Structures are given as structure tokens and as C-alpha cells.
Image 1 (tube, rainbow, N blue to C red):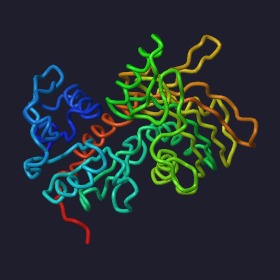
Image 2: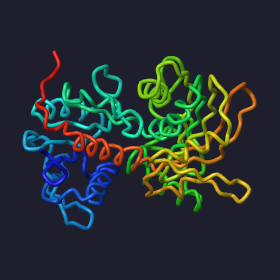
Image 3: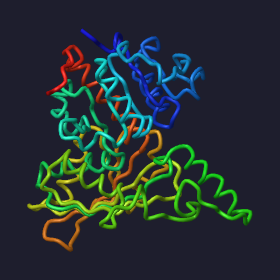
Image 4: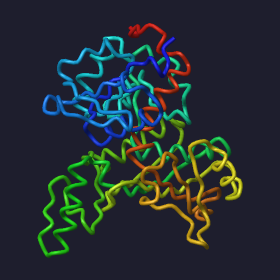
Length: 350
């Protein structure tokens, strides 16, 4: 039986923000160094990359990598690269967990948060590809699921405050250099973003669609419905903010039945992977700077929404690179190993 100490894992896109964090988390969770392969572009081939305290890996090129040598592949190389190479890895018998948006809305590919819908993994060997949800969607559904189980959600109005790390290292560099420049009166010229990000907020993440929404907003709507319940109505406004790490979500949730603040707080505190920090009188609420490097999703500012018959408002914060991407993928891998899914022979559905 394939287990943690025998599972061969390729981390594709290993030199990016998410890839490096995947390697760090795999090391933290005691996956052996000798079973991990760091895979990236030709430009990164041969570079050393840290594997926690266990040692150093040498990056191998994606273009010539043989996926039949691995049981699992954690992908985070960008949508176009995943679109080309994830099916190749799957066809070679390697089970792919993809962090890009490319496969998320494919009908036969599971979109999974292990604490929320692990049952979706039951047939993961049919296509041999599993999709990791969008970072903001993950933290939203983590908080919504236990509430939905209690009182059935009718509608959610979401506003996100997303850090620049979600757009990659170049975006983080742009915020850093623009901030320094503004302080000495240099012009803040945008490159990675459509407007200056230093000392600013930008109500655009990803491209604009025909209805005026951005693709990031569309993702939150469609992914929440696919993971939780297609009957839930969702509207989202996604905003990039000058924060290096950690996404925040303000959610106004309307239920079909009454749900008190006290009951909601109780069920959230009982949910694995959630931490409730909610005592505003003593300024006890979580901000992005406090969640960086943490695995849990944090919920604060829980209160009644009196504009609807059955409503609550809440503030949800998480490290978008960890639970919003890398950790969620590793947790999927751990669940698959625990259930023995890798021992099933891959046979693509007709």
C-alpha cells in the first residue's frame, strides 16, 4: 500500500510562491526528502531549493520530466502550463492536484476543500486530476459550510481584500518598490497591476467579463456553488489591497432559517481548521498580518445583519498561500493516501 513514506511526489512550479510553500509544508508534515522532486521551467533547472530542514533539492526541468515515476503531482505553474502538462501527467498514471483555475469548473474533475467536501474525491482516479479552489473561495467556504449545515444559506454578499502575494512574486516586488518610491516622491508606475498598488486599492482582480464582473468574482460565485450548493446565490466584489500576505473576506450571509450569533459562533468553534477570534470590545479580531504563516482560517466580527430576516455578517482571514493554496493541496494528498485511492489503477472515463 502506498503511504506517506513511500509516496513519490512531484511539485510542479516549485520555484514560485506556492511551489516553495508546498515544499515547506511537505517537509513540515514529514514527507521524506528522497521521495520529493522539485520541477520547474528550463530556466530554473539545476537550481537548488530548500526542503525545510531536511535538506536541499535540485530543480529538474518540466519539459523532459517523466511523470510515470511519481504517484502524485502537486501543480502550481500557471494555468497555461497546467493545461498542457497536467493531462500528460494524468495519462502517465500520476494523480494530479492542480492549483490553477484551468480545471476547476470541469464537470468530471472534483473541486475540493478536504474539510468541506472530501466525498468529491471518491472518483478522483477517473480523470486523475483534482482541482484546488481559488484562495478566497477556500476561506469563504470554510466558514460558510458549518453555517449552511445549521440553517441553509440563501444568499451571500462578498467583498474581498486580497493581498498582492496572490498575484505572485513580481506583484509583491511591485508593491515593495512602489511603496519605497512614493516615500521619496518617485512616480508609482504600475506594471503588474492596472493602477498603482502602493497606498491604494484596486477593484479589479483578473480580467473583466462581459457583464462587468471580473473573472475572480466569477470564480468565487461558481466555485462556491460547485463546492457547497448550487442553490446558494453569491455576488462578489474582489479588491486588491496593498498587503503582502493574507486575504480578507467580508461576508453578509442570508439564511432560510434563523441562526443566532451565539449558535453560529459555537458551530464555527467546533469546526476543524477554523479559529474564532471575536471580542471586539478588547480589539480581539484577526487581521492579515496576524494570520501570515498560520494554517487555520480565522473568523471575527460575527454579528447580526438586520437588513434581512435571517442574516449574519462575518470577517474571514487566512494566509492565501498556505490554506488558500499549498496547504489545501497537501491536505488533499494526505486524504488520498489515508483512503488508499492511489492503490486504484487509473482508468480514464470514456
